[in-house]
Image (cartoon, rainbow, N blue to C red; front, side, top):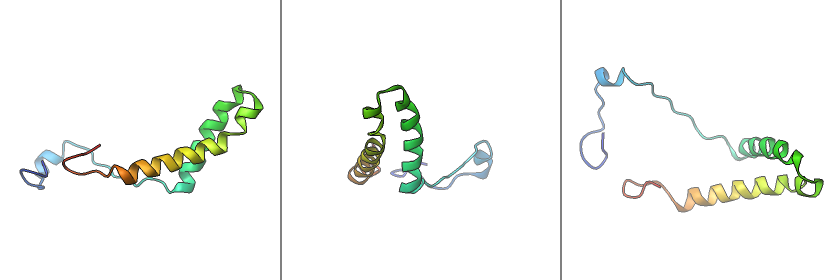
Length: 80
């Protein structure tokens, strides 16, 4: 199953031993809501001035994630 050598065919007798699941990534609004939920609950232990920055931190994290995904595309030669 190596894309540079071999084939893309998987024998059904081999495949029956594995569970294959594919999920799409959530959209940006859903990711932002997930990030905010975790960060806001974590920041309850900090002073209010820091806790108020949770929204900005989440938005920055989402933008950074998008930039990394766009700049470091997956390829067979460079899969990071």
